[in-house]
Length: 303
Image (cartoon, rainbow, N blue to C red; front, side):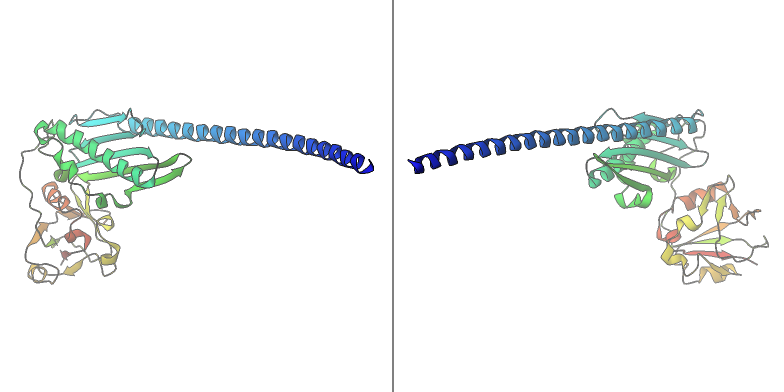
């Protein structure tokens, strides 16, 4: 009998303890659920705030571009827009025939770094296609598709955000490389521009010019066609140019190659830059990115 009573007592105590433990378990579970829910709410709130900040940043960029490009375009080839799709991209292009350039800007977002870089490049290509199509509907924007990814280089800036990545890119290209025949008020007759030169010779005789470490060449209208931005750091270490005192010496220089481009400098301005005619500058601009400028195959002839 005593054993039975003892067993019943132990059983009642076990049930009481188990009941108390179960209540504690339920309480902890409820508290844990509340914590998880709060954490999710905080995450959702932060995500919305960060995305809203990104949208505001895009809108600010758009307004800044609109303010910068508020002047009417003489060529009529100007565009600025926010894409109505999941990429939330802001893009624009502007053609300036006076300066001989096409400027393209873009801000895009995507889930992965690889996607955002590709989207940025695609948006830029799309803007160039629009400009090309506006200038010549028959071109179908084919020139834009020829621009390889590596040409964009360090112009693409990627930033990580809570929901993925944001990329911004700005690129300026010589019109001669990406657009067909210019149209509008500043249109010029179409003529082929030779690009198979092996070097560049600047004839600066009679201008009292002197050799310098960082020579710069610009057009009469002010566009720099040769300077630090056009050369590679590796090549610039050995000097941005070779300096000689005779045209014959320039032509037989190791850097001259078999087909040098000879350009006459009109003057040396107050900034010590060599000024050349706009037509000559256009030809040099067509060599942008080539080994002639990138590898400093440039020779100056001075007295």
